[in-house]
Length: 108
Image: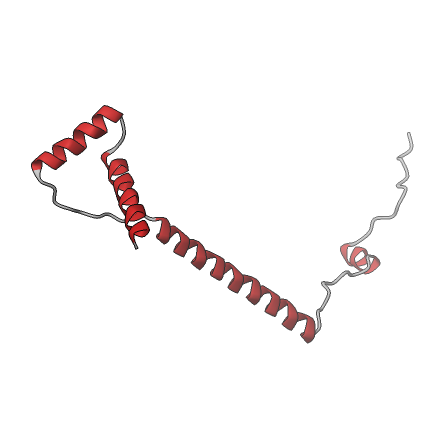
């Protein structure tokens, strides 16, 4: 039996690299690099502004607590009203404040 003939001659690594066209990365000009850098900086600055505004909005929506001393009878009436109507005491107090501010605005 005869040995099969190779169809293509073996290629060394040096020959293989010479045959392929070299594709280098595009070398941007100084003007292009500067404009891309400026665009990136503007995008980062815009992101910082949006994050700052988001934090400010969150701080405005945060809960602010108010403490006020109530006498025993008033506290018991508030608790009973909250229990009877199945709502929180804070909801009743907010409604009372809103009602008060509406009536005082009309009086002005």
